[in-house]
Length: 124
Image (cartoon, rainbow, N blue to C red; front, side, top):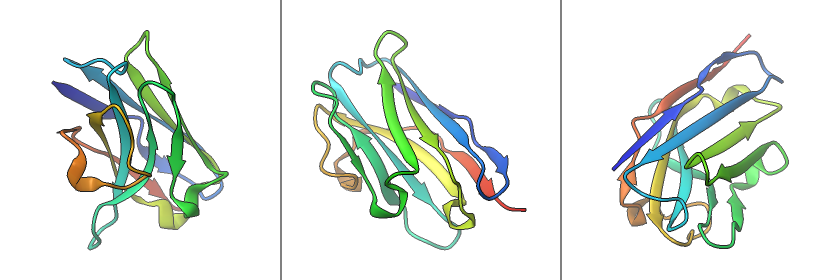
């Protein structure tokens, strides 16, 4: 199983980025995908999650209205569209897979598979 996170980069405050999480060796029909981020010196935190069967989504309060998680089952890929980015969004972003349903936007220890991370830097 591999999860390939991509799409990070340097963006100015107020800008946008779209992260992708391409899965191989598992099907998004069966797995929920979560996005987590880890800022320097801080613990990894949940950002968002999308369940497999019903597509229910969850978001951390600080990203509601700015981030949108979606999936394309045909491409076996999950996206995280990030808008109105703030300096405090700067972190390494990871995607992870767990069986079927999300446990809110967190549940770090309940994920089976992890991608390698992509760095998002929000700075002027």
